[in-house]
Image (tube, rainbow, N blue to C red; front, side, top):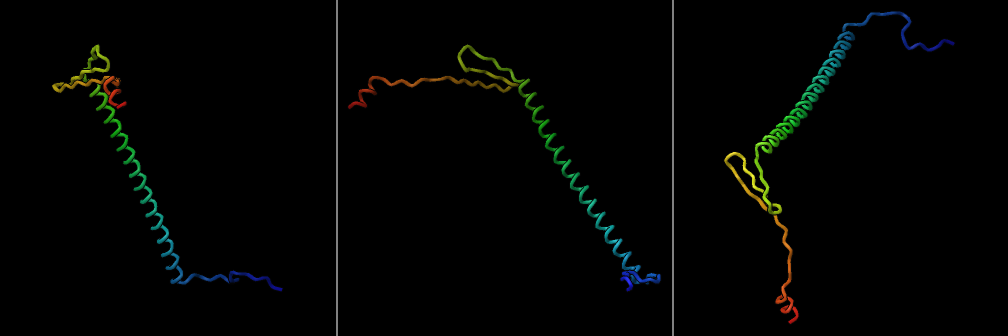
Length: 113
């Protein structure tokens, strides 16, 4: 019994149509790979740009905070929580104090009535 052989036993040359089909398929695959590589490069560049932008924004904010805090002259007074700051020609003062609530005898008497 003869074994089945998928290829023809005698050699033959490819026709012009078969060569064109193979060349078209190869060109199509190459174009798809090039497009994929370009898309990946664009995405990587965009990601790097976003990271660089975030880093620049954070660095600028830190520098601004350091400059503002470094140029601000604050003096604390003897009162608890009182602070006076001046930065250039602008000055501001803030104070925080703790207060305790007390109930007077008048309000206790008015509650009982």
